[in-house]
Image (cartoon, rainbow over all chains, first blue to last red; front, side, top):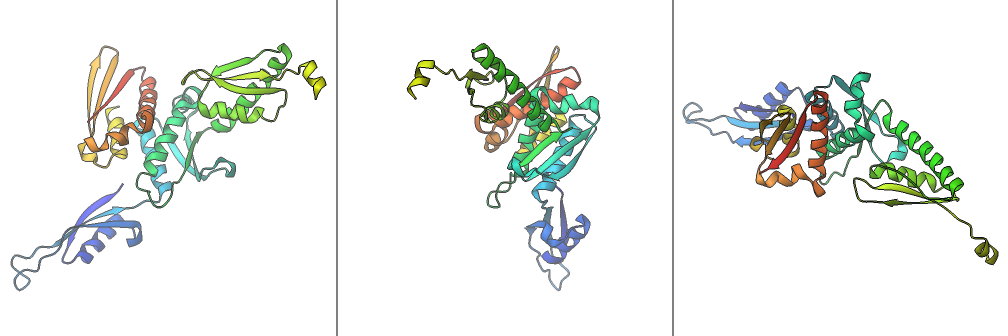
Length: 223
Length: 76
């Protein structure tokens, strides 16, 4: 966050000089008066200038973008950040795309997207830190289209595992994965009537279990 | 790495001037002690330690890049 401290004959003078130095308009800044001016004798002796602190208030999406770019830089990664509107079905407002060399992607994404999720969580916390009344602004952080590719991969995995469960008439448990990934699988397999899904185990080793729906012949006869 | 932690902590707290990070090397392992204002501890740890977990994850990724192992402790 950019802030400067400026002085002037009046509070208004001090604010104006601070705004000029910051290069922003009055509506983009918040002002804190450090010291009211004191008029001296004949305007000469014992007078004190006004002192103000002016802070540039960034819109949350700009704050989020700057925070993420600086965070990546501090991580030693040569990356830039692009701001996009979030996909409408995501429930988020903005998507931040990390653009970097392919060799740096594993460090940005992490195992099963764990680093990407951590970056995303921190971006959301920091960008919404001073927004209590204005409403929460939700961000997605993505790199190299990872989130869409991951979802697609999970759905394919779910289909294969479901088919195996049906074929072998046994439950199939998947690898342990984060809650968001499990949800993708639960939701996706809702559309199949030949399997049901549950989750078993304790975080962080919770895993999806796919259970084939067994049609008991005797019960089927009753219906 | 120390700057990264300072940046993260300062971005999260209400009293950035009270943030300090101490670094201690134990063989292959580097231990970072992040100290914040007592009023800000919750802002760095978060509900169920979610913020602390995210900080460790990000710092861990940066350390992994340099083939290092790090531990992050949070104190007030």
